[in-house]
Image (cartoon, rainbow, N blue to C red; front, side, top):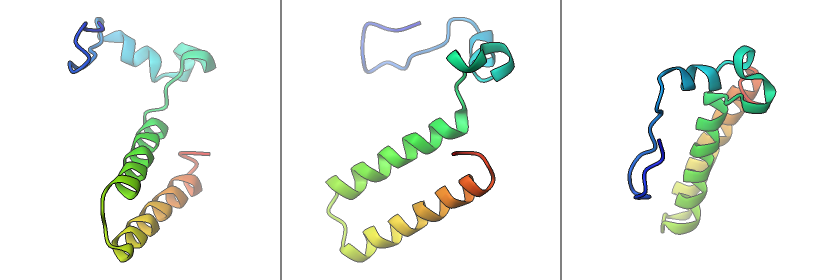
Length: 82
C-alpha cells in the first residue's frame, strides 16, 4: 500500500508479495528483486552521498572507499553481484 505522505514507509498489502518478488521461480526475470543486490545498490548510493556531501578528511574518504571496494569484490567473488 502506497501512502499519500511521502515520509511514510511503503508497506506490502499482502504478506506473499515479498515472497513472490524475491523468488526468481515465482516472479521470473521481469519482476524478480534480488535483496542482496539492492542492498549493495543502496549502500553504494549512501557511500556516494557521504563521499560527495559530507566534509571528511581525505584520508577518511580513502579508507571508506577501500572498505567498500573490498566488499564489492567479496560479493562479486561469491557470485552475489555481477
